[in-house]
Image (cartoon, rainbow, N blue to C red):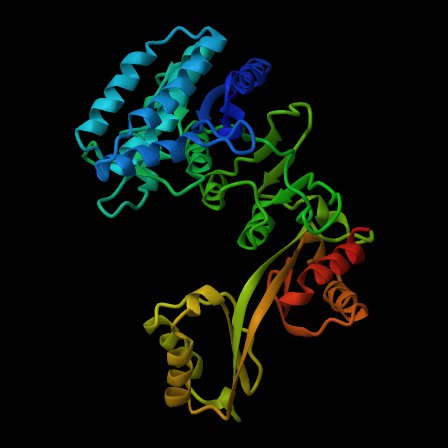
Amino acid sequence: MGNKVVKFGGSSVADGIQLAKMKSIVESDSSRRYVVVSAPGKRFSGDSKITDLLFLCKSQKDRNVDYEQLFQVVADRYNGIKHSLGIEADLDSELAAIKNRLDGGCSEDYIVSRGEYLSAFLAAAYLGYDFVDTAGLILFDSRGRLLAEETNDALRTELSRHSHAVLPGFYGTRKGTDDITLLSRGGSDVTGSLVARAVDAEIYENWTDVSGLLMADPRIITSPKPIESISYMELRELSYMGASVLHEDAVFPVRESDIPINIRNTNEPDAPGTLITSGKSSSAARHDSSCWISGIAGKKDFTVISIYKNMMNKEMGFVRKALMILEENHINFDHMPTGIDSLSVVIESSELEGKLDDVIEAFERQLSPDDIDVFTDISLIAVVGNGMKGAPGSSARVLNAIARENINLRMINQSTTEISVIIGVESKHFEKAMQAIYSEFVD
């Protein structure tokens, strides 16, 4: 029997109404055998996420502030879900055990993880599936790094004993201990991906509150077109610029096993969403159409440091020295466009806070440049699509769109894979540039 792994985000398990939708989705397809859930999210504007409430409980306990009323809010939320759906489960015992651990000085990771734990506990009882705790299955080393292969073996062995199961997302334990360790925020996406790999799922469905990915930010572009399909590589390029409803690290486990991801909307279950695969997306066949791209994404607040030195290309070790200066100052860089006599490093401005003067001084002392320029308040825009690969004129179209709007280009960088073009513009032109590029390729 084939199987699908389905993950439901916080908005999809926020209350009884959403859990009823979840059940309908799961039961509509018998191959949806393994379910991963997040902690309940916000039900409405101004509401609180359970994860945040549990964090506050721990914070108040550590500061010797009474947290009883706050914990009762959490308990009432889960009890409301239980009673509204008529779920048969001993929730009181679970809540009492958690409170006892909190009173006894549990770790922050433990108490925060209970949001997912209780969510999965109730969802399993509601669906009639087995509840499988991820403690002892998703494994980390002593430094909190995920042990991917050992996790895969542990999940595969345990889930082979369960034909249908619900698992909590977001956490696991350090190998050989009972110490709960959290994945990063959005880690339930990663849990779902790990489970999909372990059970050799035919597809990993990620159910959220949006109907897949869009070709551009709707806050900038009015009614951007949806992305029907996209490759892992394209998604990675767009995710880097923040254009994703999927946790970035969730891609890797399923990518290794060639398992497609389908982003779906719990509130619009008939919508196809976005399919993410290892192959080329639908944009790959657009060489003869007016649209070769899969999406456009961008980020603000970058600084560009440009170094000029005559005959730089003949000086052995020049780039290595520049990178070592950044490393010594614990600074990550995003791009490094070069010319015969020039080198630029593009860095998120936050990385340079309190360090810019030291970096410039080190560049001048160790590299002896003829000139250094610093450009602040720069925005990067990535134009991504398999359809640009081998298609003459794609970069020219990006540049022409910018030129028509009289926008000065600060940098351009095209990957050797030819699936992305990244440009830099002054942040005051960011939205205008995004609109111009979208109109060029899509409208």
